[in-house]
Amino acid sequence: MSASKVKVTSYPAIANAPLVGLAEGNGTFHNLHLAGLVLFVPWLLKRLLPLVNRGGFKTYIFLLLLTGLPTTLAYWMVMSRIGSRKNEKVQLPGKNIEEYITIKDPELKKLYNGKQKIPMQVFHDAYFDGKIDFNGDVLEIMEHRHDWAKFVMTWSLLKYVLTVLIPDVITHSRQQDSDQVTEHYDRGNDFYSWFLGPRMIYTSGVVLNPDVKETLEQLQDNKLAIVCSKLNLKPEDRLLDIGCGWGTLTAYAAKNFGCDATGVTLAKNQSEFGSNRIQENGISSDKARILCCDFREIAEQKPSGSYTKIVSLEMAEHVGIRRYQTFLRQVYDLLDDDGIFVFQVAGFRQCWQYEDLIWGLFMNKYIFPGADASCSLGWVINQLEKANFEVKNIDVLGVHYSATLYRWYENWLSNHDEIVAKYGDRWYRVWAFFLASAVIASRQGSASVFQITLHKNLNAYHRIEGVRSHASIHVKLEKEPEYVFAV
Image (tube, rainbow, N blue to C red):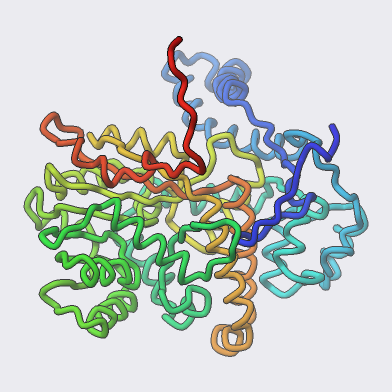
């Protein structure tokens, strides 16, 4: 199929992809094929192995449990290598790998040269260690990734899944959450300020005009205003901000709407920064506060209906799949029966490509350890409805996140010398790769952000009162329409 059927964009609001950056990757995956393989392997082993071929159904179930995960990983490994791209609408240039990257490690150079593509996991690990360099801007070269890298499951990734990711998913203890958050978010406020800027908000902003390049601060201010509008904040409200980060939304809500606002975070540096921000903005401590504790402590101590409004922006990914439903039920219990819950969460597309899988494992290992609940929108909605929430509105903000990440990326690069001087070249490289790849992933739909407005699914909830703040139904028409009448 002709590449002319794929168009490029030139919107100032985002980092627009070149044509090659719009190429589809390998999405060869079929649930029925995998399910059949998972069921077939233990049946075959039961027939062939002399020690178990006399066993019955219980033996088969035992073998199924024993082989299910290895079979799935083996399927991923094979299909990531032999599967084809979803389509060929964009033709790859077919340049030599040396056009894009410089491999300084002799052993790697022997393996990957000319038209021989390098596995993305092998590449980024070597790049972090200084064994490979980009021939130019990180984001620009990453746009051409399909021409020089291949997205395949490697033995290193399989080892990580088996020894780290799965045990984390199974356990996901409070101590694990505390250790991971402390290691990540207490690294240093300066580290985060070098890309987050003065607002210190580590969640997606919102683009209001694609035809101009709004600043990072404008994107975040847009988001703060939108979230507070969806919450329909009033002076008499009691707001809980779960996973409040550096406390900007908590302070913003108390300062602009006069409500009582409580932010909660596990990170000591964040809580101290947020408390100072509240004080510096002239907000009294009896009106707003940042608590450094586990959200579950509040859920266990506070009576039902303690808060009229609750917000959680991109924190629930860290809750974990195992404890997701418990978390949502705790939020439900803390929320007043007439209250509103604004829930923003990042997740991956359901019909994923192997590029998405490889990137997700990178993110889990290097950027957000323990954030195993980055699931599809359908999964999230199912969990929310199981917890007896009713969905009022959903805004998918993936491209908005790409715009936000692009500004973070620009900030990070502009502070190169300071970052390397204090944290070293490796940390600089890890975050440069993260931010550049995330710009692409969120722009192309590999990952996205879902902003969901909810309330309790009760007969007595007065849904009519939410019409004014239901932004998506209040459209602005470019011209007065001509109505159709019956003749």
